[in-house]
Length: 283
Image (cartoon, rainbow, N blue to C red; front, side, top):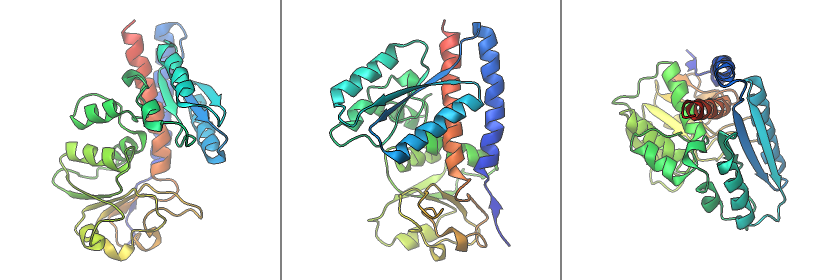
């Protein structure tokens, strides 16, 4: 019997309906001020340009505005920092997203960390990560926060469960592990160099694939009845998990596409609206 589908696309649409109402209420309260997400795109990578366009479309669907900052591939670290400073100082901008990756000559971490904490709606700063990890209010990285919202919506119990996170990136694997730990799960963090990875995954009540390698995690490694979350997306519509063979043995799973991806953008929109609401409350 096939496991239940953790449908991120359906949930993201519900979230957008709620956000539209919140944006309308905020506009009435502030005399028409519209929440604004600023996106910074450096260079001409087509995939990055597509992602930025998708985020702009999502802004429009919920009644927000997007401010696009496009910079040439030759941009230096100092030039990018200056652009971020302008957005930090602009009271009409509520969230800032620096599209990853940036050209090789730019110090990406330094630029991420220049984003003001109050506008770090994509959860990429070290300060935001540390604050979130300590259980204090902060915007979590959008993809992990979206995964947590998806698990909560579908009633997946985390407390006391053994969650195995396969991947340790600073904007996915690491923050996801901290969020699960804060939800009282027992967390094991693995990666491509972990010894005896199949045996560790076989212990998991919840398997979270987040390492960016197509179908790296095999269905045979996953125990029957586990919950499988696949945060990967690769050409051919496959994720990090051998999902086609998991469907019949998992208790629940995220489809690829239509699982984690839509939740990432919905979470980014939600956190930008929250930032705008906080800014309005402080005026």
